[in-house]
Image (cartoon, rainbow, N blue to C red):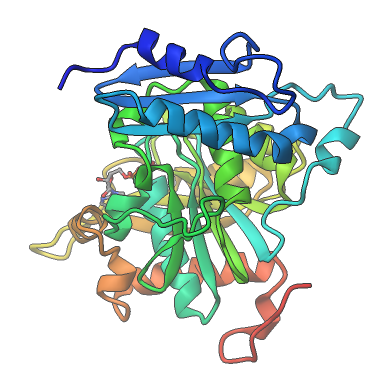
Length: 364
Ligand code: ADP
């Protein structure tokens, strides 16, 4: 079948009317970031946050209209309240509906740059929280490079029986949500800023997270809009920074530190990943990079050093096969290392006293 063109999609969207009935959606000028690629269609509707309820039916109508164009395989339309909040008007952000009301502690796992094992660490920490008896959820906020589906071994699509809210998927006892469940991995890469913000907001607002003791958020690498949105929209209990020992990565970590400080998100500490190499053949430990750089950097920056995880083939194989090492070998040395880090994090976000077998904690 022929691939749908952008013109066909805009023509379809022009047939959608607005709540006041007077204009078509295209000429209203609120459609932004339209991407039509290989039959996949994505766009955002830029609206004022207070119009979210009124515009939700328009968003759905727009999705249906685009879906009806021959050759369209998938449509993702998001409401995007991306108007910058002036620094002098913090009240606007507070007036928006509360997100994630049933979630206890929100912990962001961040890194200065990509490829340092941030997602692997996030997944193994989530599994460790679960092993500690906590109700645990994971949000993949890495919209441009979602790795949660692969890492947790999830291939299904979440359902939406009411057409409004999404039922998240579950793997290894963790409630999971990722944009990778909804769009093919390569299409999210080309989204523009407002769509990313809209998608993130919807994953927090429209997903039935249920009551959770802790939500582990796998942040995108670096310091961008997603980090700011998270900090402004939800009460992040703290951020955990993941770094490899190389100095270069550590410079990026310092940038991350500064950013979280600026937005008043407490930095819970630093984890050194791929810290040293444990030879699988002889068991010898080699310090490939200057091991301990993260500990020094943490000390210099006045933040806690939470622990180190070795560079080990078993961790990579497990992460890439959908069964993180903590799930695969819960009583092994790696699981113990992640567990002790998880315990320290949980202590810091206020739940330390009630581990492990205590009655469930409920957050009001
Ligand atoms: P990021 O989220 O920082 O981009 P990932 O978690 O996706 O990084 O990890 C990048 C690659 O490194 C993956 O293939 C992962 O399996 C591997 N990896 C992560 N941590 C370790 C580790 N401690 N030992 C071995 N491989 C690791």
